Image 1 (tube, rainbow, N blue to C red):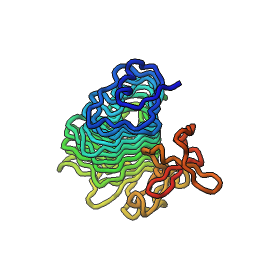
Image 2 (cartoon, rainbow, N blue to C red; image 1 turned 120 degrees about the horizontal axis):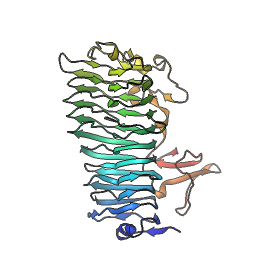
Image 3 (cartoon, helix red, strand yellow; image 1 turned 90 degrees about the vertical axis):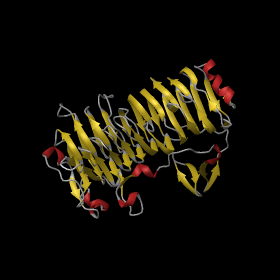
Image 4 (cartoon, rainbow, N blue to C red; image 1 turned 60 degrees about the vertical axis):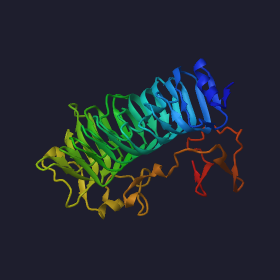
Length: 406
């Protein structure tokens, strides 16, 4: 039986039994104070039941210092003054699901993550920070339907919005402007690292919306530099510009793998105008892609101010005019039935991913509904809906006076 948590003191006392099972039974007001991190390796389960921790600051290591168990259904409306809002280090963990951070502070949602699964989580950070918004670093993690919003400006390598974590990213997105001073900056990811089962990193049906800039080299709209086995499938960048001293790319700056099967990009597009210093090189889609024929059905915005490719490894993707970029018929190979959509009133008229129509974010316990016998009915707080965030038919939330199926 799970232990009920109703106060910040009880929350902190979880560190006295890190293998226990816990449920949050109400919102916790921190009263403007700092919540000190729950120290040690938490191997149990924590269900926030969609309640929130708010009005305060999260200490140096997040709510939990280390995680090898499960955290789900928790909302953080806090400032973060440390490295992480939720978890400092998650390793060999079971699951982080339906957890959300709305607030401020120069930190990541998860600072480090290795071997685990993260689903239906979101970050909406105000202001600008230097750390990646979602996961600062990590490997071998599967991310599903996670989104981040916020601006990032840093002085190190690989500054980015979502994170430099490597793994499997399915239907994830980032929104915000990114600026870095030492190169390899990217919108979604900066310089993703090593391999992930099945021994490579995959970005599938992911996006970045925003601009990328930097005073150094190799900045890209979606990612900066990748020199590991990597796939990009059905991804896009919508933004105005990518700037770099040299080696800028609308989608990616530098993708290199000695293994001829190591890098592939398919069914992707980018809209940013790429600019580099006078006399330097850049690519409207990618500045350097090796092998240079490792792309299929990729497109970029062609405009008079767009950088001119000079070599074969910069001639990636097919050019489309602004008008063509807003017509589904221009995107050969794209699946506009099951994967992509296009609407003049959505995504500035550019193609979007159909999964973006699904609401991902905090849901109040009082805002869960079902449709029964021809009408909407609010669910009693004591009712536990198994698999609420797994696209079950008949489960809804009410946002802005409208019902949305989740």
